[in-house]
View 1 (tube, rainbow, N blue to C red):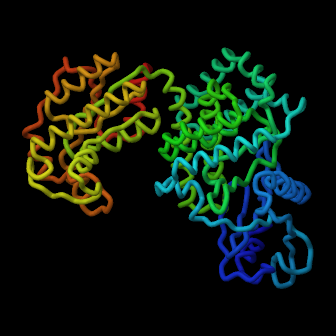
View 2 (view 1 turned 90 degrees about the vertical axis):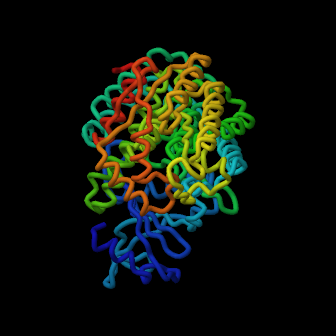
Amino acid sequence: MTYSHFKDLLLPSAYQEPTATVNLVQTHISLIFITDNFVYKIKKPVDFGFLNFSTLDRRRFYCAEEVRLNRRLCPNMYLGVVEVRETPDGCTFAGEGKIIDYAVKMRRLPEERMLNRLLDNNQVTEQDIRCIARTIAGFHLACERGKEIDLYGSPDAILRNWNENFAQSEAFVGFTISAAEFELLRGWVNSFQAANLQLFEERVAGGFIRDCDGDIHSENICLADTVYIFDCIEFNNRFRYSDTTADIAFLLMDFDFHRKAEFAEPFLEEYLKVTGDQGIVSLIDYYKTYRAFVRGKVESFRLNDPQISPVEKSLASDKARRYFRLAGGYVRRRLLPPSLIITWGLTGTGKSHIVEELAFVLGLDIHASDPVRKELAGMILTERHLDSYAEGIYTAEHTKATYSTLLQRAESSLAMGKSVIVDATFCSKSNREAFRRLANRADARFLIIAVNCPPETVKARLAERQLKDGEVSDGRWEIYLKQSVDCEALANNEGEILEINTENPPDDNLNRLLDFLCGQN
């Protein structure tokens, strides 16, 4: 299909059923036309090696496969394969004429009930997660298995998939993934494979290599009148025939990506209750790394698509970098000793941004003073409270209660075996000392991230922050000036200290932190 062809399909007259609107969404492999009540998905004529839709016959075949395979989990959503025809009046689904392509026709699901949106809007409950887990568990128990399928669970087959991913991602080194991250992941995969051959063989012998879905993530799940899990891998058996662990690892990785890691525990509890498959625990992190890397690769592919706008490419590039970061983070988590990390720095210096990124990559608990302070005062987090310095909710009494609560929460995280970041100014040496003693009691590493930047940069940031809605911090320039007088300087004997200047590129700062924390400095 040419550009003019798919432009015709944006007209309501191109469809058999009446529709007021037609919207187009593009992926690296599909053109998706969304009408009022239905969705039509046309495969792009691309050949990525692992996926080949380059001929009309191939696109027709894989459209039929998509319908057949997705009806396993969504029997009423996938309606069939329809022809795209060329007529004197233009390209259409409704008329007679030469068949120029094929499309999968589906019922349209409510977009506001897509799991990725619900996650981002904090509208997902534990009950929802358990329902999804039961649906996937039941599906896995019924999935086809056999000798041919078992071949795809062998260590050699799995390593082939990894090596293909590395080869296809090499072009993006220096753009969406750093050379260091790339080599870290490649080295770890090879060492993990070599050390765990028996584990992979046991999964094959136990019957856990099945004809799975291959693409279970939050964008492919809808919580409507029932749980819909759609858009499975139809184009390559090699990506669908897999360990059931690899199938659920995609969704668990997605929880991490959306900063909803707390949903992993109820999901796994419910899944194990139905399947009894305790062996997944040993491979979950391995396959989460794989899934994050694949998503980084797929988003990177979008950068080479001439039909995608520069804005979409920029978004895809950012998304790819975060997926690759997460993949590397899964490896680094194995290198991180139990740690208690605190920040030191004045308001507006950029503490929260850098530690939020660090927490995302390494899966750390994070407790911050701004929300805790307002929570203790019974306030809405985004409610502005422009008290003068050391007044209102910023009195010595309120500040003492805030740090006491932060200390308790950090202790709880460490007691559960989790490394933790506490994000606060920590201008008081006595507060820093209390957290250092906690780290000693918990036998945890103690690190202070000392954050700074030039005052003129802070002033500009704080002025910009005042104009934004939804900000939790009440920091202002006059507060910064007062803090700069009262803040007690760090001494070398207080613990490990790493200085960060937030005027430096964010990726450089994050890399320094990761290397320092995970023993690669």
